[in-house]
Image (cartoon, rainbow, N blue to C red; front, side, top):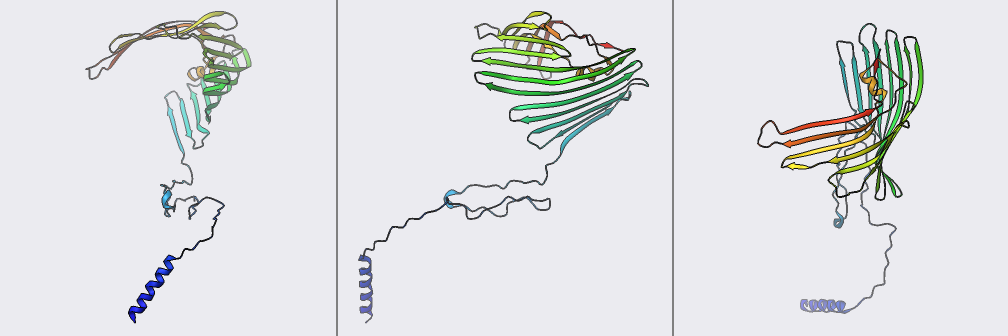
Length: 348
């Protein structure tokens, strides 16, 4: 009986395996691609909750992606430093710098220097500055105020400027490299003995290397205290000369004109020895902000003109020393220059 039942089961299995069943076509549609089964939302962790990922993300086996939870902070830390000092003359110097976490505001600086030299000489200076970064452009607004008093002398100066810098700027076939532009105003009132003066001046300065296709031109202009100066320097192409950075042009303060030049010469003399010779014509700008930082009781001369350095030659000799423990190199420098319209700094 058992043999009959076993034979019947095997026969039935064989019959089922021999049959062919055709299934209908099934089309599977989906509105979106396959996503992770578990969706995670970023959370702001407080000081009492540790910022770690306790729930691992689930992805299909075929698309495993390493993941690391970001460290989220509730508030960015303050990063700043202060410098202060006091001298026997009563000079107090205070400097505050604040480094912001903002992507655009990089630095905020404050300088305040009150001074009492003696019973009659008093002064104070306040300088505020901000460093802004917008893509490849750097903006530096600056505000400066200075006041000084002495017997028979009182002066107040206010200057506001904004500086713009960028490494490269293109406009069609014209490009500007190392562009620096300054715009602002300068106002002062001065009482020297029986003479009272008040004046306000615009300030504008721009320097950059202009390039049009294969031609390059150094452009430098300065408008300061009612005076203006301009320098145009054409960069000569490579002429198979030993001179580097060779340029020729003109320099003028719109009262006189003079030739301008730029060059660099670097011969290799011996092993570990070389000579560097550089020459350049340029416009010299020393703002009243820089002058008054050094000379607080400086009387302004409204007849001063912009200084121009017609030529400046410098020669540096460098020698590297080997086999010596303390002395590593020797540098010798010699130079000569000629400047017109030099600043005539006077004191009360």
